[in-house]
Structures are given as C-alpha cells and as structure tokens.
Image (spheres, rainbow, N blue to C red):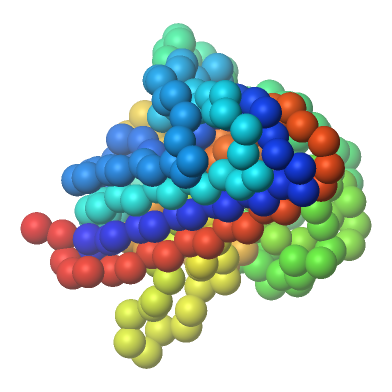
Length: 295
C-alpha cells in the first residue's frame, strides 16, 4: 500500500520565545517491508536544521534551532511511503521463547538493531514484578515466540481499556497496569516490561496507523495520531516481529514505522528546550491517506 502522510505540530506561546532547540524524529526510517519515496519538512517561522546522530535506537534525527523571537512554531512533516508487509503466521518451526532469549544473550551484533540492546530495563520501562507475573501466563519458555507474542498482545487489548484520560506521557507502566487503562504508549510499555522480565529482547516502535480502514474492516484505535507498538526479536530467521497490543493485531501493512528505541525517550517525535516565559499550548494532527497499492 502507498501512503501519503501529513504530521503537523503547532506550538503557541503566551509570550514570545527568544530561542528554541529541538530534536525532530519525524522522517520514517528504513525498515523491512517499507520504502520511503519522498519526504519534505517545513517550519514556520523558520530555523536552522541539520542532521544529528541518534543517541540510541533507530531514528532519523534532525536538530532544529530557532533563534528569532516568535509566539508560534509550526512543524509540518510530509512523506510518501510504500508498505508491503505480510501478516506473520506462527509456525511449528519458530524458535521457543527460551531459545530466543539464549540467542539474544549470545548475540555479538553491536549495531542499533542488535537484540542484545533491548534485553534490559530502560529509563521509562523498568522491570516490575506485578507486570512480569501477569505477562508470564502467556510466556511459557517452551512456547513458540510468535504464538506467545500475539497471545500477550491480544490479552492486553482485551483486558485493558483505551482511555486517553487515564494517563499522561510520563505515567509509569505500573500505574497504567494498576488502572487497567491508558493509551498505546502505556500498553506498549507494559508488554515490553513483561517481555524483558522474561529475558526477551523487546523494542518500542513509534509511527503511524492507516487512518481509513479497508471497506468492511473496523477502524483501528490510534489512527489520527502517532502510534506506539512492540517489536519482539524472534531469532535470526524471523528477525523483529511487530505486535500491536492496543488493537490486538500484528504489525503489517497498516503500520508505518518512524523510529525504534528502548522506550519513548529514544524516539519522541519532537523534544528539546525553549527559552521563554508563560504558558505553552501544543496541538498535533496526523493524517495517513492510502492512495493505492504499492508497485
């Protein structure tokens, strides 16, 4: 499927801001099953933009510096991207969770997609005994990796309520777990915490969902905004496989990956510092338009 994506972030400041420096992670990365055809970034009232190295994870990072006084800042990211990613099918030949954990520990890959880099707790996703015990019901070490991953994603989707009022961007996974509610970020963090507690390499994926579903299919939760889901490394043959616990589905052609990291701190679409006084208001809009089948 070929998509046109428009992601607009608008900041309004109560008082003029004299200086801002931001990291932008808005350009989709190269990832299996997707190919970026075109990308454009516009900024009003303007600023200096230069590439920056991703400190962790997999992201296209740009550094934006705005040195002129402004009461508003609008960042608009547009891209055209082809996604051709089949729905995974579990197989009796899939490695077990125990085998996956051992292979990840034995990995000598030092790259950003190395499974060893995603085995351990991260700043926003600590290990949690309650979450680990709850997730362990689906994570029998003898179970096939894909079968276990989709079972856990579907149980989260079934037993947790999507509630944007239940949590904030910095709500820890334990709080969302106790409330049994939250948004896509919360559900991804809970699943990742449980997988890592079982010794499994799990990454945080950020990106977009198809806005309008195919005819006759339900609209996915999380469209019209940035979305978050989980990648589980399932051995060298399967590689990284995506699971969406918000919707209880696999990552396939409805998902567009923008960045991958240990948690949200690695892949936040926009972060940085602003020098000024007074309140700030931020509005975000995302539109993911399917425009035809990918060639």
